[in-house]
Length: 179
Image (cartoon, rainbow, N blue to C red):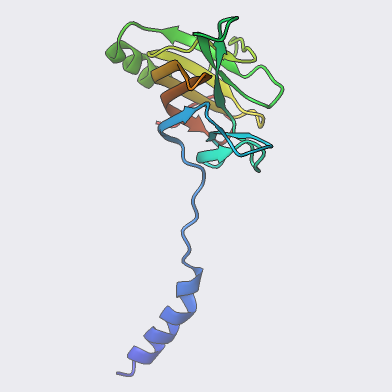
């Protein structure tokens, strides 16, 4: 009994200091779409690698990436689907395109370091399943994306685009992805 109270006192004094701190989510699978929300101003839901979650445009932080569709001149069909960012930098680089998921996943898993010679564009134009992209955030951090699925159609007279992608995010700014 003489050891019970000192032990209890020590437990009470140290327990509040045991808080789990978590950083950003470094990998996962996400679906985003081009649906507009609100009644004005409108907003779209995109993905924030920093937050590791879906966020709406105009929030803090802004989404790192959103999806849109380019329609035909008469707005009756979708010509191509693209990922974009509001960071005013060339941020997307297509690393490879494949015909099947097994080959794409193998490349994605073996793609461990962003090359220094990589070139970037302002949007990820004409995304398709089994493509592997590199994305550079406004904070100069990197994510690799494997496009798993793309939906492109006219819904209720409006262009609609949706993609599901798997990602690995490097939150420390180096060009080596965590395993």
